[in-house]
Length: 274
Image 1 (cartoon, one colour):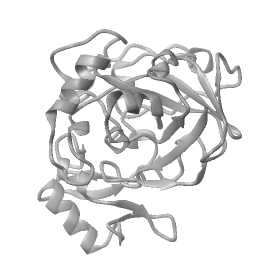
Image 2 (cartoon, helix red, strand yellow; image 1 turned 90 degrees about the horizontal axis):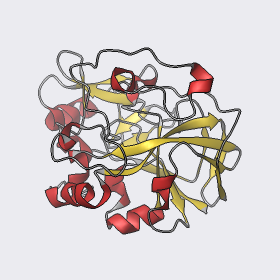
Image 3 (tube, helix red, strand yellow; image 1 turned 90 degrees about the vertical axis):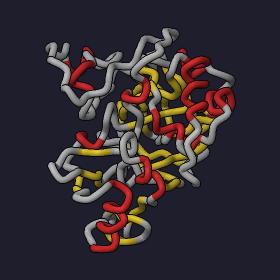
């Protein structure tokens, strides 16, 4: 196996950019989701309810700050583009920490799963694409690790997909059949929630090794929806101890269903890597 692609999304819910190399850290790929859109109340909004955001291009300026269609994230032009896509009162806010993520800092997908699903990989919004994987082998990777370059990536759970994958990355034309197919053939989930177990530099083309265990794994930085309904992620228990039970947030998506178990309701509200 090898590392086929590295993606980051400097502005949450907007189109991303490919990288040749990156140094993975606690917050995943540097420069990922540096800013996100909030509404007039200051609540984070995403492409799940404002799909026109997917038509904007997030990027990184010379100083590392996020850009929108090449414009500085905090200038008037970028602000106008955001309001046009997300509605009056919408604006960009800089991310402080892991609240920028819905689940975990990384999303990993294999080329085999992308071929089986027959979708444009950009619909899935991964950070890392692993090449040389046969079929749906990734569905057996939960709780395991990938050694890539100097880094080790921990694989947690399969990612439940939502309405975001129904929008074409270029035209924004919606095809609900994409989500229906993922639900019917893959129990609603594709790709894996992941985090950096050991920081390190990765490059496209690096060999990838699947590990059964990694005793030096650091604890994950959890996204904004995780603590609301998910207990300790696989193999994180020894690093951080069991998480106390918490009442789910009212705005939190439902938890992903167990692998192999389908559902007819609620997919549109489930967390996707926007």
